[in-house]
Image 1 (cartoon, rainbow, N blue to C red):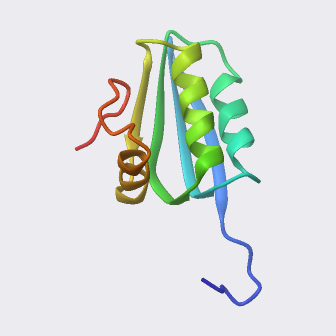
Image 2 (cartoon, helix red, strand yellow):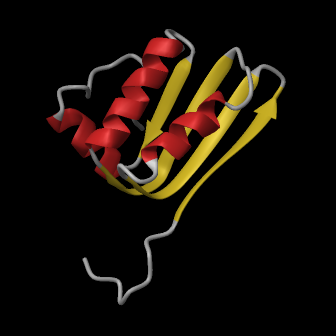
Image 3 (tube, rainbow, N blue to C red):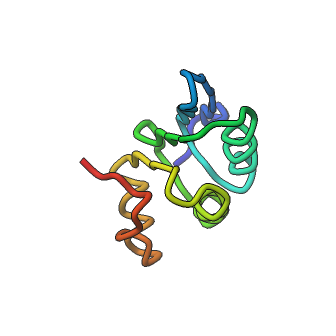
Length: 104
């Protein structure tokens, strides 16, 4: 959708609480931003990682790849909280039943 020349808003921020890293991502995650999301999740060592994607409005194959790579690097310690759009894309990709995906 044309947004009148305004680039889509993307942000990825991280906060650590003890051994828990929480990464909050907003906006569009695509080939231009997926690596930033991935690197933000790796910035601080943590025992558990929550990737909060509830404010993500667009999610493409580069974003899927980044999440799968995070799940492989952090087996059993990654929790992904998806938006409706992210859930739909992951379902279409055949990843809707992954243990790291925590739908409401």
